[in-house]
Length: 436
Ligand SMILES: *[C@@H]1O[C@H](CO)[C@@H](O)[C@H](O)[C@H]1NC(C)=O
Ligand SMILES: *[C@@H]1O[C@H](CO)[C@@H](O)[C@H](O)[C@H]1NC(C)=O
Ligand SMILES: CC(=O)N[C@H]1CO[C@H](CO)[C@@H](O)[C@@H]1O
Image 1 (tube, rainbow, N blue to C red):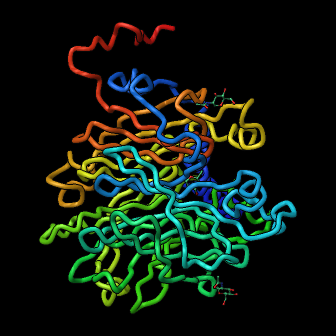
Image 2 (tube, rainbow, N blue to C red):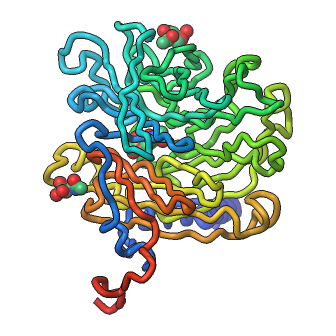
């Protein structure tokens, strides 16, 4: 054999061994073909302890966020409209099936103490402007004052909208639109609002937003990104004083994003951690960021800490209020999702929720041992959609003993008691023998 051919062959084999084999080996886990369809034993009877909050109104709430005792949710108003226009699902019918008027999705709040539901009016948001909700984040900027950041897939371009909300009010007030399209932010997906601090005061309106695809509406481009799991997603940072900047690139379908958000003064620097889901890779990467808009864009303003590898196409990420767990919901059997999307009453789409411990490797995640592995607990592993179909957001709270789950076709947001009540016999109605 000619030495050049030998060298080329060796190089090709090296490439195959180092990149393509591990890349291809991820497929069965991600597609769920090797999944054991059982949650961890302590969550086996979780479904029996759930109730659906407001099933008539809270439909298709892909993203919700709990701040204190208030749950904020961005929900679909009209499913026919969503099926015709939703860039993230490659639905690009600008005529929205010939309907007149703008798209108007809804923002709700639920008081978790009384379960009272309020649809928040958007009185000063122009009547003629689309509001097609997707990812969101909410932070408390001062006691009783909240700032909501919502992705809005307007038909002219996808942007991030900022609203203010005051505790007890019935409406949200639109304050700003952040448009990053000239910098390539065509496909904003989810948002992490930077907590308020001396370094990043409320007037900075600082947030990170994932950009899930590189292609805006090319069918071929989107197919290549999906089937080849191309690393074409990215993360942008925005503050009033810096405007938009792309700060992370090369992410395979950057989707959910979350970070620690406690506004307590004197929080340790390790709290400046954010997590980005590369959903088509089944990985979540943790980064440390500098909250100061003047320094975040410098060389060490954002540093990678660790990548977690999971057996799941996971979606929206959330951190528990006590900062102890990173929750993620996902699509356990993603190949069923398009069929479910087309015929939701006939084909189920699995719901899966995991939580990753953020505390076991030292005081708090990021202070020590961030190269080790973290414990993963399987909270929901539901192939038939018994909890609901196509889970997308999950979060739990050990202190309140609660767990919430929502998704693409969920009717209502599920609220569950996380733990089995004391004295109950867990094994009574569930058989955990692995021999069936
Ligand atoms: C965002 O900016 C682009 C480019 O300047 C523009 O075409 C588009 O209309 C803007 N969209 C909104 C909603 O402001
Ligand atoms: C999930 O979808 C399946 C199939 O369409 C359906 O039978 C089931 O009732 C759905 N689950 C819920 C909780 O609605
Ligand atoms: C905000 C966010 O990450 N939204 C995702 C939640 O789940 C849905 C359903 O898969 C995705 O389309 C969203 O991108």
